Image (cartoon, rainbow, N blue to C red):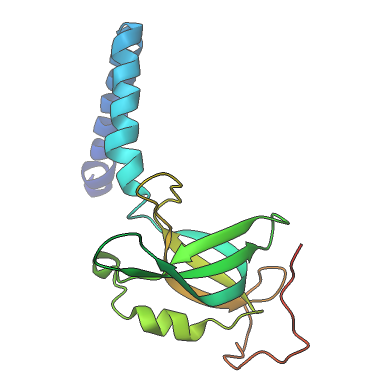
Length: 169
């Protein structure tokens, strides 16, 4: 009885609530459905892309890129250029800035962990937006992997030797 009271009843209530919501959605007119879908994308999916980290498997090409903003204050953005491991020819750009709400306080520590030419699994939040204002995904954490994306037992954390060149298409 304890199991039924603690687990089965809340699960049944959730199922009934979801079913009723789905039935109500399908009874709406097309304009109401479209408004609900757009509102869900704008107020749920878009903010979630700035909170929920997602993995990218990349080879770091350059971790010392400066982008000068065309503003009077002369702000500078620190970017990281990388190449996707599983999509040949796809270049990625990341920003490395603080994200206290996700536990990233030391942006310089992430930059120091990256070595050009090595392969990494980076967790990123945010979107790449090409229009004004331009936005870049922010790197939250990095972990060194091999060329297949498998974690290394003992990451090197050393300067890459000269013969270890980045793959450029």
